[in-house]
Image (cartoon, rainbow, N blue to C red; front, top):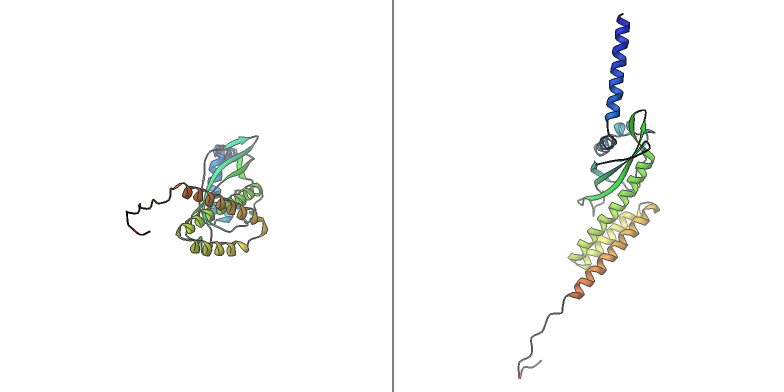
Length: 208
């Protein structure tokens, strides 16, 4: 009789746990995963993935935090929009906070939402590169406002830092340069719109 009661309790508890797992939304799983990543708890992060392995991104960053909000669910796969906030550990960028957006992808496995580690880490890598390109572009614009000499100094430093990264990053660096070029062109057009200062009319008998 006691064995029967124990078996009944076990089934009840297991059933309760399964229902609890099903109630966990994909964005909650995604948020927990990124919280672990930001804290450097790779053991917990890997435990929440399908394959239990995480490929390091090409661009090494300091992940400050991430916010997962909302989800699209299509045939057992969830797509969770995720906003990242990070720093790039370069001397010229160490104080700048960068931002990026991506989608965390999850699969429902035996009632649990698990991170698709391969696809998600690819998305993460691409998001970091785009975010870094935008971040460095803004930094160069600020340097330009302080003067051409300061701009050239910062530009050379960034190029030296990025030179050590693999060729896959070249696309993002070119994107950064294109964004900078467009920004400079807009700034030049704005300057051209301003009328030149009007010189005072010479008085009669005054030498010019």
